[in-house]
Length: 93
Image 1 (cartoon, rainbow, N blue to C red):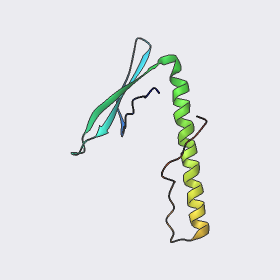
Image 2 (image 1 turned 90 degrees about the vertical axis):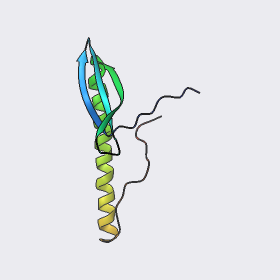
Image 3 (image 1 turned 135 degrees about the vertical axis):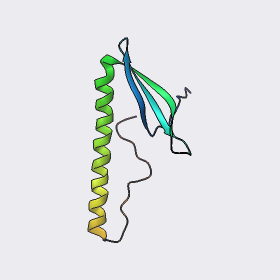
Image 4 (image 1 turned 30 degrees about the vertical axis):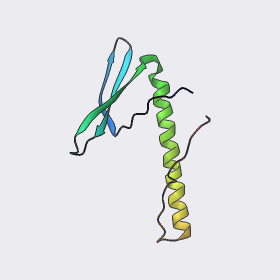
């Protein structure tokens, strides 16, 4: 089985394009609250629209689930906390 690296990121520190490759330096917040580089994602510039569309699709789906959770909370009780499930997957694997 092939394992792929997992990088947790709180944000993007830097974005640049060189020689047709987009480089996104990912950031992790340290204990002092300052960001530190966590890794770099490199994407061919011609593939950037597809990558951005995939991220946008996930964002829209998360927002829809949050709205559903809020609607369920409102329907059930004003005092019950609405929360997204701890884990869920979008798309096919």
